[in-house]
Length: 195
Image (cartoon, rainbow, N blue to C red; front, top):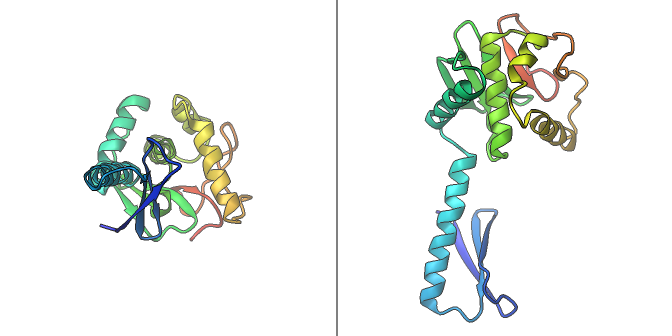
């Protein structure tokens, strides 16, 4: 567990908040709290932060469960990956899929992003199990995801803020297919290819 720093404030009347700062957890409480109230609220707020961390940073097993749920909700349960896991060797891709062996890899850079963005990246790779490339059939599979454009915009914003060149990025829905690398590999890129 990280170091915990409690900050008391006379201006704070009833609210308690907490956040991460580097390797520390900062808990803000009203100055009037007793030591017992402080212990109770610190425990509560640390638990909330950890719960949020787990939700934003699921394990490989949780990725698999999430992928099955997304496939069922948006792809009729047809996309069934053999495996889905986090990887640290994708520096210009959000995710990638190898349809021939039905494996999906999600970049560690997606960890901590909003749940709807992670869901989009997973769904994008699941759709590649059913439709190669990024042609109209592929985008039709994703059309039912209600936060499609919002998630794409979020990822584009992150890539832009990181100063990455998006001129090579996958095209928008309805665009021409533009598969990278070998024909059996599909990827959701955010900059120049790692290949």
